[in-house]
Amino acid sequence: MKYSGIDLHSNNSVVTVMDEEDRVVAEKRLPNDLAKIVQLLAPWREELAGVVVESTFNWYWLVDGLKAAGFTVHLANTTAIKKHDGLKHSGDEADARYLAHLLRLGILPTGTILAPEHRAVRDLARKRMQLVRSRTAHILAVENITARQNGEHNSSNQVKRLTTERVNEMPLPPDVTLAVKANVAVITALSEQIDLLEKRLQAAVKTRPEYELLTSVPGIGQVLATTIVLETGPIDRFKAAGNFASYARCVDSVHTSNGKKKGAGNTKNGNKYFAWAFGEAAVYAMRFNAEAKRFYDRKKAKTNNVVAIKALAHKLARACFHMLKEGLPFDVTRCFA
Image (cartoon, rainbow, N blue to C red; front, side, top):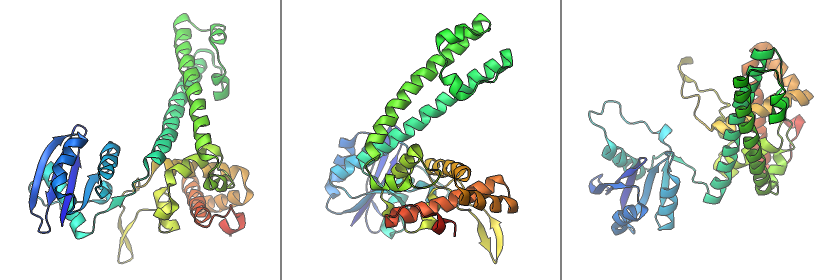
């Protein structure tokens, strides 16, 4: 059998093919051209146990293309791969060989390769979040300007409703007026695009049964349910509720030995969009659900506000896992028993 590893970069890739003795039978740095990479791997197509591709920012085209060409492809979870620190020499070729080596040993940490059509909708939801954050920055800029110039406080909804005519009526110096108009123009444009994306996302997810289940959870509305559905993918890829909660960054990362804490791991390991969704869900749940508020208050009395919100987010994440796994709506007594 043969094993291949690809060290993927922004404009080129190092492709390695190794045998069962870890001997290199082919190795070359190629431009990011699917046809050339497939041509290099083609002579070993029948012998290849698999091709390992790094989970970098630009892996879609390569993984999808290799799968379409008939190869078995594995997406390496780079955050879970640690090479020996004592190596005297390391480089792109060594990295590609190491990926193939891990595949041969059967200890390669892998990520999930979601279907291209699912990734497209998920990335659209991420784009919506990017635009919302950009719009928020411009809204805050207008709020700061009016507070600085006139001592006025404008809410975000008031800023969203501003027009050029309304800005002209404000008692502001000409240059400041121009600055506010620039912010308002960007806010208007972003709002239009956000509305367009939200309609497209709703059409894509509102008929899914898991979306309906998630909207039964206190604190989870249309936007958060859409995010959770799309970032989760197939629920079967999570072995247990703990894995699901860990993916949402709701689980502590602690290293212990002989009952003593010896350090901490990567607390950011997980999905930042998932973590945001459950964090927001916890904030809204404690505002609108009595059981969630009591749970939060008990935790806050023992710790602090941040830890209490994280604990509530953890509780909701575990509940959502069981809901999606069993196909049952939210049960408040089961969640906060």
